[in-house]
Image 1 (cartoon, rainbow, N blue to C red):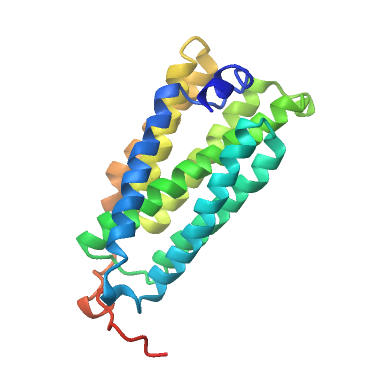
Image 2: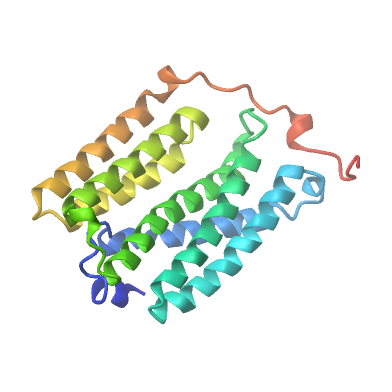
Length: 235
């Protein structure tokens, strides 16, 4: 996949530097931690965990298919499967954050953060995947240059990250977008418009992360009775 990105898709400007994809190690580590954590019998009755696990299975199966389609360079077909990864992860993310309460530290590190990192990176990957498909199709961009479109897409990604930060106080999601923007700035250090925009947006998100405690009040902590549901589902 890296070879295809660097050769066939070398002209896709929104693609970050190669080192950025090392984040997959963190994603897989988080998913393994979640997989072990959700096996606990006391969590079997937790509706949000059940929903997240079911949707995660769909996303993982779609990702297996996506790898095959991408390596076969069927880019538009791979966009369809990328959306089939993104949408279930969005549903799982919303299910886990629906309670509106601050989770325990253990649940935050073993559930919330793994999904946040995975969802954020797939959001970035979806933009890159669509850009790759358009690039292969030789899309004219309505007369707008590639560099300006890249600036627009980076702005949209940063805007989404800012909205998630303010709505859910989700630093992990925001920092993943910072990671991607930083890698885009590094890759295009020879193109002033792109690296200045990427670096500026990344710094803006970092500032938002740091100011978050003053901008958005902390939610109440999830009570023990809610974080540790009974083994038998009331239904």
